[in-house]
Length: 162
Ligand code: ACO
Image (cartoon, rainbow, N blue to C red; front, top):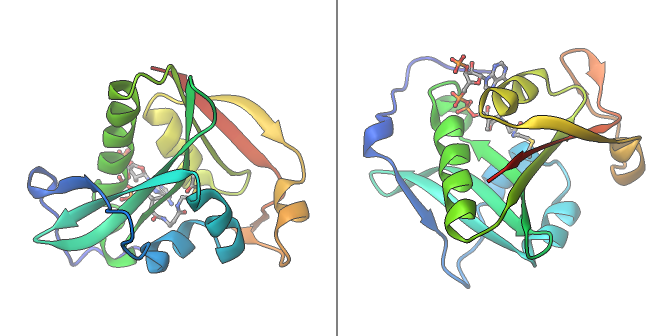
């Protein structure tokens, strides 16, 4: 549910990589991916960035190296009370900038066929649909997932050149 009563001043946010040894923000990570097992599998080869407001973590984004040229956004999440206020857009724009600064040539992001809002947001931020991993959510997740009344079955892969 999106609450409208809290405010976020995007200009006042900070975007930082979390330090090695720091506990990953699982409360946020699990909002984007219901499987802790899947999260732990990609965290090993990933970097976690967080958005903070007045030293409080309000969102996170995970960049995972695929190869020398490509990086993937594996997870992006914002505290439920602060969703819908531009923080997700802020996180993705900063992650794209970060990937470019690190000399990657391509950035990708995957989401379920049922994640209508996310598909809207990612395309609005310059990603184009370039692939479908058929039955990804049926094969890799033990429980059925529904969003917007649609079963999450396939992963829609979106990419953009940097
Ligand atoms: N439904 C409809 N529109 C949406 C949604 C949604 N679920 N999410 C974002 N949007 C739209 C906004 O309306 C806005 O549109 P506008 O620019 O035309 O006004 C635009 O996208 C930007 O929205 P933000 O306010 O920046 O998005 P937010 O801060 O809510 O962050 C996010 C988006 C990360 C998806 C957040 O809602 C969230 O944490 N959701 C739960 C976790 C999740 O689903 N994460 C993504 C999973 S896929 C992955 O991690 C790779």
